[in-house]
Structure formats: structure tokens, C-alpha cells
Length: 270
Length: 257
Image 1 (cartoon, rainbow over the protein chains, first blue to last red):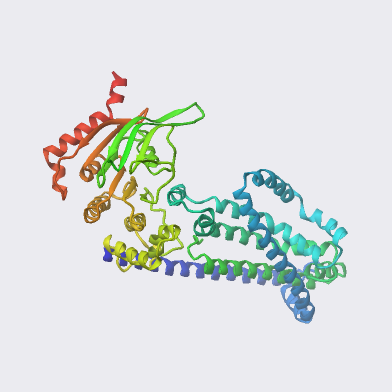
Image 2: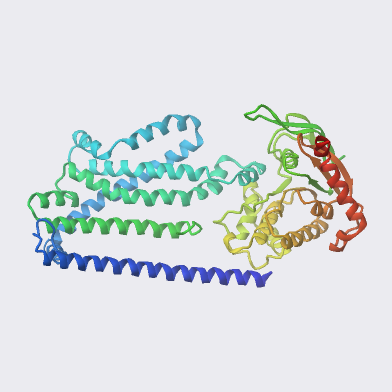
């Protein structure tokens, strides 16, 4: 009995180790490929003397990022703020809504089609309307972020809340558990890994949402900076903003993945 | 008074092709502390009967008495084990076992002590803090047995509990279950499609046949306890086995001729 279990644990440890090693290997491979691409880009840009307003060499982008660092940091913070507030708002509204949808057939039939319609509307097209209604401040950007994040979280949480295996529901019913007990002890924890899938999808949309909002009308944020610098042919600065947006998106994604590991360590990993 | 009394019980399900009779005219009395196995091919209604006894579904017709009173709502006097262990992955072994106690609002300290005893009883002492994913299928099913026993129910319902396990683990758990039952007697109703398992465990085997699900024969197993593997090879055991096989497939045989 104990011999077999020790074996299983050792096996699990081995697997974990192997997993970590392969993750590291994959990361190293990706980094090497990225560096190689940047070098090729640099060589091509110099060799063919591509004008910097068309396609700046990586060295030129880095240089302009250093030169404009205080502006870049300032605009990044604005975009980050819009992203995080919109995302938080989406979580705060989506999860209770998913719970309501799961517990009410009426809501399921009435709200779901509306959600789908809302999701089907291109956010780029809604953004100008938002500017019209609530102006050019931070709020319309937050609303766009909210709109793009909202749907994946609702859908994932809803499917998670209904993913309780039926024997488990039978067991709970045989104990005459209250709905609150069922929700707190079974349904919500079951839904959490699903919910995090939605959160990870949503956070990658969130930064895009903020930039869309800024494109429509704004006086700060990285989206604004891209718009302004391209119109003034400061292409290296536009690329610099793009680099920061990408980094922001990736860092936010991994932040959510990290929180997932801490909050739902039992979630399947891939 | 019998522990459970079933009289002319019918269960009909609605389906796309009209009503389907899952269980027809089932009459059975189950005594206190009896070990009953329900055996039969799929579609014979054995799991339906188990769910009816657990009050997880309502009968279409007929009488179902539990301790002499009509059974309407699930009673806390029942523990259930399913084919899958369905443990909560975010809870340790100990906390999984304690789940029913929490839901029923039982005394924490006393439940904890009982849980520790049960975990030791099924041979999982030292695994209290482990998570389900760290356990083998057989170990998970032991945990699920502890969970079914934590609130000390007088009836234990088991729906093909060892069917997903390999043959050796299955045998091992069967004997372990009998040992536990012997030490702390309960009324056990155990569903299986394995005839050998059904005979080896039971005081009485209820052989069921399909379309519609009904009781084909109730067989008293005259083998002494404790049961041993060697009993499987006796003439008595073989004759039980043949008898059950014959009555289970009787309906089909009649159709063929």
C-alpha cells in the first residue's frame, strides 16, 4: 500500500521536474528565435537602407525608446490603468452575472442572447459612440476594455458552474445540502479553473481594448502615442510603443497565470 | 420490521420515443444489516432501483418504505458510493471525508476523530493531508467509502463502486468492504454487473433482467462468513453462478426461440 503510493509520488515529482525542464527548454528556444529574428531585421534594415520612417532598425527603436523614456513610461501607465480598471470591472460584473444566469432559467433565456449580440458588435465601431456619450477622458477607454473582457469571463464561468459531475450532485442531494452549501462547497470551486481560462483570454483582449479606445479620441496612452508618432513620421517611437504594449500584454497574462496557480493549484496545467 | 420495504415499484422515464419502463413491478424486503447485491446486465434497472432507495428519484408507482415510513425525501441515514470516486480535487483526503459532516452540521471534533479512524480503517493512514490527484484509483475509492460512512448511516448504497478498478484492486476492495461491514454492520445495497462479485459479497443476490427491468430471482447465498477467494471454486458457488446467469438472460433466450 505505502510502497505503491511512494512510487506514485516519486513519479509525480519526476513528471513535475520533466515538465519544468521542458518549459525552460521551450522558453529558451523561443527567446533564441526572437533574438535571431531581431538580428536578421537589423541586418536587413541596414543592408537595404530601408528609411527609418518606413521600417526602423531595432537599434533605432531601442535608441528612440531610451530618448523618449519618460513619455513612454507616462503613457504606459495610463494604458495600464485603463486596462486594469476595465478588467477589474469586467470581473466584478461578469462573475455575479454568470452565477445569476446559471441559477435562473429566465435570465438564461433573456440575457444570453443580448450578451451574444453585444459580443458580436465590433468594439472598434462602438468606441466612437462611447466617445460621443461619455467624452474623451479615461472612462470611455475603461468601458471598451470592460466590453471586450466581459464576454469570455461570463461564458467560461457559466460553463464552469455547470460542470459539476452528476454523481457528485446526487451525493450532495442525498445529504439535503442547501443551495448555498452546494454553491460554496461544490459549484464555485468547480468553476474556478474554468473561470481562469476566461480570465486569461480576457486579459489578452484587455490591452487591445484600451488601445482601441485611445485610437478613437484621446490625449494620452500608448495608443495615442502610436497615432501621434506615425502622423509625425516618428516611426521608431511608434514601434517603441508597440513593444511596450506587447510586453504589457504578456506580463499581464503571466500575472493571471501565476494567480491561477496560487488560487487553483488543482487546475490542469498545459 | 424490514429496514427497507419495496412493493410493486414502477419507474417510467419519458423519452423521445415515448415512455420507457426502467423498472417494472419490483417487490423486495431488505432486512436490517443485510448485505444485498443487485446484479444484472445494463438496462436491468439496478442503478434505478438504487437511486429510488436513495430517494434521488421518485417512483412512478408503488410503495417504498424506509424504517417503516414512506420515503419521500433523501434521508441522512444513507451513505452513497459511486463508480467514480468524485472527490473534490481542492480538498485533502481528510477534508473530502468530512464533506458530508460539514453539510449535515455535525460536531467538528467528533467528525474529525471519526474521519481519522475511517481513513486508518481503509488502510490510508498517513494520507490524510494528500490530495486526490496524488492517489491511485483504488485509493480514491477508499476515500469515497470513508466519505459515505462519516455520518454513520445505517444504509450504504453502492453503485458499481469497484467497476472502474482493475481486477486485483477490485477483489482486494471487496474483501476490505466485507471486513469493514463485519466490524460495523450496516444494510448494504451493492450494484454490480459482475456475478462473481455479487455472490462473494452478498447475503442475498437479487438477480435482475432487462426490458423492462425487473427482479428475476432472489438467491440466498449459503456460504459461511468470512468469505474467501477459495469459495469461488466450490461447486456451490458455481451452481449459484450458473443459476444467476440463467435467470438474467432468460428473457433474451425466450425472445430468440
